[in-house]
Image 1 (spheres, rainbow, N blue to C red):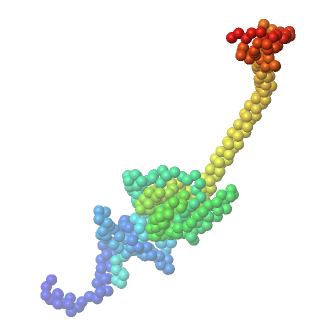
Image 2 (cartoon, rainbow, N blue to C red):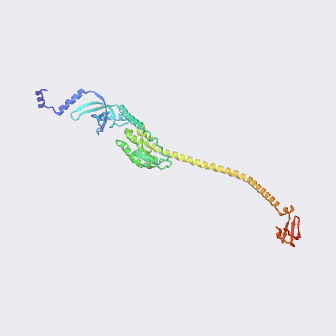
Image 3 (cartoon, rainbow, N blue to C red):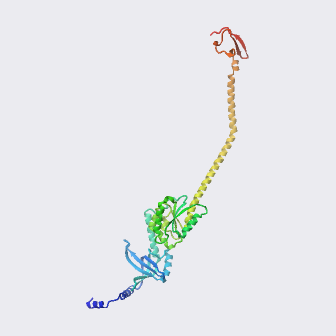
Length: 401
C-alpha cells in the first residue's frame, strides 16, 4: 500500500458500522445458500416472543476441547413447526446436550455479529446419536461385567419395607403409594420417600445421592423403587447415563423401576432388577409378590391340615385294628394263665403230704411235733405214726443211734 493511499485511509476512516456492512455484504455474497451442518447444542433459550436462541459447539473427538462455536436463531414461525416435529420424531425436547443436524443460512449483522438462521432440522441424526451413546453405555456396562449384577440378587420373599426414590410432587409417586397401601388383600407395606428430581439436569446426581442414603441403612429395606410417572417423555434421556446405570447395577438391594413410559426401555430399566412400565405396575408387582407368598403359606397350611388328618385317620384305623385284636389277645393270655395254673396245681398236688404218704412214706410225731431224728425221742416215749389211711401209736423201747 502506497503512502498516499494510506494517508487517505487515515484521513477518511470507515465507521465500525460501515466495516460491518462490508463484512455482511461479503458474507452474503460468499455464502448465499443454505447449508446442512452438525453440532452440539450447548445452550437453548426460548424467548417469550416465540423465538429460540441457541449456541452450537463442536468438540475435538480425541480431547473433548471446543474447536468451534456459533450462535444461532430459530425464528418463532419456524420454531413453532420444528419443535413439535422434533419432539414427535425423537421423543426428546429440543434442548442442550443433543447433537443435531441443522439446515442454516449464514448471516452477519452490523450489531449482533455472526449468527446462523436455522431453517430446518433432521431428527434422524439426533436419534442415531442418542442410540449410539446409549449403546456405548450398555456396551461399557457389559464389558465391565456389571450389567446383570442387580438382576442376580434374590428377590425378597416379603418385600414390605420399600425405599422409594421419586419427587414428592410426582403424580406417579401418589399413584404408587395409593395402589400399594390400599391393596385389596390388606397387606401392610412400610414406605419412605428419598427425594430426587425426576426431570432436568439434576436427575442423575439426585438419584445417586438417594442411592447413597439408602445404602447407609440397607438392612432396613427390602427393595428400592424408582418412581417417575407424569413427566414429559422428552426427559427420559437422563435415565440413560453411565454413572446412574452403574450405581443401580451394583446396588446391594433389588431395584424396581416404574418410570412410566411406553417407548423402548431406558438403560436404567435394563440394569434394574425388575422394570415396570408404570408406577402402579411397580406397586402391583410388590403386591403380587406378597400374594404369592400368601398363597404358598396357604398351601403349606393346607398341607399341614391334610397331613394331620391323614395321620389321625391312620391312627383311628390302627386303634380299630387293636380293638379287634384285644379279645383274641385276651383269650390267648387267659388261656396261657389257665395253663400255668394247671401246671402249678399239678405241682402242688404232686407235692402234697397225702400223695407222699400214699407212696409209702409216714410221719412220726411226739407230743404233736414231727420226729426228725432219734435225738427227738427217748425209750419209753409214746409216739404217733401217721400213714396213708390212718395212724397208730407206738412206744419207744430203744433209740439206737
